[in-house]
Length: 208
Image 1 (spheres, rainbow, N blue to C red):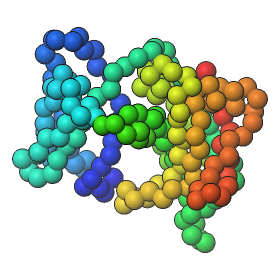
Image 2: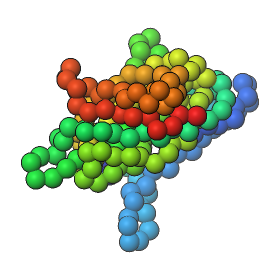
Image 3: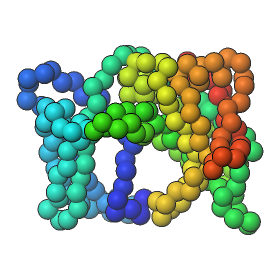
Image 4: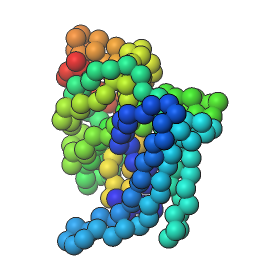
């Protein structure tokens, strides 16, 4: 919301056969609550070109200004992860007279143009004024989350939602799908950290 440099985290799975032309059209709109959404721009990406590009990423200039980037990854593995987590005693970053509105993101570690980076693949809904949030169950494709490798590093990050889009970091931790499953079985909390300090805990209610 309220951002001209948005980073969408929704991942789409597309059937693609090598050598077969396949293109994806992306249309961007400005959401209008009471009325028809306004078109901002559109671009077409060729899947084969994306796979052959540096970092599997291509850019397209939009007619009305701005640039749209698209990234594609080869999907590996199968199955779904049903994950529910809750936060405990999160450190408030909102100020003295209000509480944070926390949401969490999951990111996988990927090799982009020769360097390792975190790629966001899931974002939860935010929960208003709550430092002990229990988020709804997330259903995530294992191929999207970890490429079928249950030991691949995953970053769980918690943010305070801001209407400006400049969300405030509340803490993060590194784990894996197997780590999440083990935490669910043992009921052991996972410690969130920010700037080297403990800032609350994450409990895995279920990971199956």
